[in-house]
Structures are given as structure tokens and as C-alpha cells.
Length: 112
Image (cartoon, rainbow, N blue to C red; front, side, top):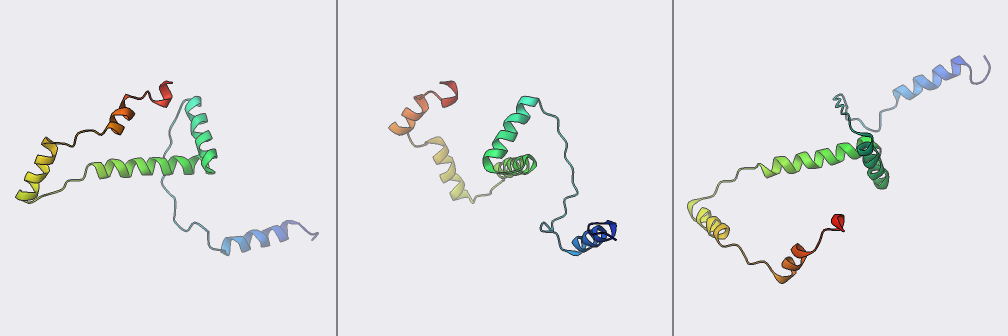
């Protein structure tokens, strides 16, 4: 058979199947979403800026948001003394610093 024929291709394909995959974690869950073209373009641009594929960028972003959401819902328990101290701190928060006041009075970049 000539070089590059079917027999050689099968041999190459067969040998590649025996090598372990770089990403051994099985990905068998599928999530599909539809987005406006402008949103997809923005997400693609952000992914490119990070040097990621669009799906990698979206998965990283969504995972980060999910973790934050879950952590925000954590319940914590305090003994009676710690609970009183906690309530005192909530009732008498620190006064905002001059730096914080200046930052809060400044117009956000996206509104300039």
C-alpha cells in the first residue's frame, strides 16, 4: 500500500487511542444556552483576552459565580457572647473614612 494509505492511517489512529487523554476528567454534562449576538461577541472577546476558548471562559466565570453564591448562603452559629458582640458590631458600624467617601462620590468609569 502507498505511504499515507488507509492501512497506515488506521495504524496511526489505533495507536492514538491507546494513549491516555491529557484531561482524564470525564465531561459528560451538557449545558446549552442561547444568547444575543452582541453578548456572544462580548464573551468571545473576553475569552480571547484571557487566552481561553469561549466554553472555558464561560465555565470558569459561571463556576466562580456559583461558588460565590453558595458561600454567601452559608449559615454560621455563635455562642451567646459572640452573638452579642456580632450584634453590637452590626448596630454600630465603623464610620466611613474620607477615602471611602471620596470613592463613593466619584462617578463610575462606565458612566463617564
